[in-house]
Image (cartoon, rainbow, N blue to C red; front, side, top):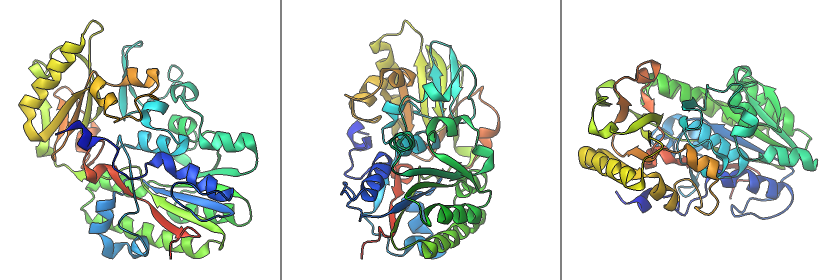
Length: 383
């Protein structure tokens, strides 16, 4: 598969465009999305809701579907939560903010860092995430109120401190609670509200997005959206989007790579996601070593995956404009990146644990994973 086919240069906006356009609308300016002027704005991020998934379950999501134009989508890559949320909140690509995957190899420390759960004293969220957030900029300027609404379990997490810093964090432990808090926040203040919905993604991971459990959560979220939309003042805009979609991958389609396989020859760390593996070679590896490893993967896996060197992925714009990628972010990428293009996942055979029980998977380059809705509601509705 051509690297250009997997480039984010699809003509769609990216998640990095969402908050700046909301801020522009709140200041009476016109951004690339052409949003109408508003007093306040809500961005509802539904974790794990791909555009294709939503369309295929349209009968269970009538409020989502109402007024949603087919062209109203955005691109999110890497198609994983830490990258997508941070691109949204920093208005930058993953190669700029540095949270480029579920896990990444920290070469100076010799450790694979889990960027969802692995935060600690030696992985400071205030420095590991490389960019200021939109919320910090608004807080410092003082003219708009930045608000983030999420679960209590996430309030003090490393990812929250990395990606939502600068926002006033308000807790709501049910979707309905969070909608109520969002309506409170925009009742009179000039607030930019980030409203996070985790439950759909949780159901997809555990049961698969094609399950009845996922549909139940979709219906619950759709009802909450209806409540939110009905309660918005006339001068408040609402955008609904997501950080990624997903594919259901049963256990029999997990591909195990033996430790002595030529596909792991010279590899000192395996990171990333089961559908987007980062393979890091030793410190003395050359560009030719990376190219040979990528060639071995492409030969072995055929149309199941595409392997690309870090150098080529950066040049193709996978992680943002090549001229703006942060050196520290680039150093966290694998020497070779293996992107699943069919319904498979990849594990080194020694990898065990709960991740193998996850049914709904994401992270890679397919449209099912990378194309997310960008639905205009409230004062942002296009008549």
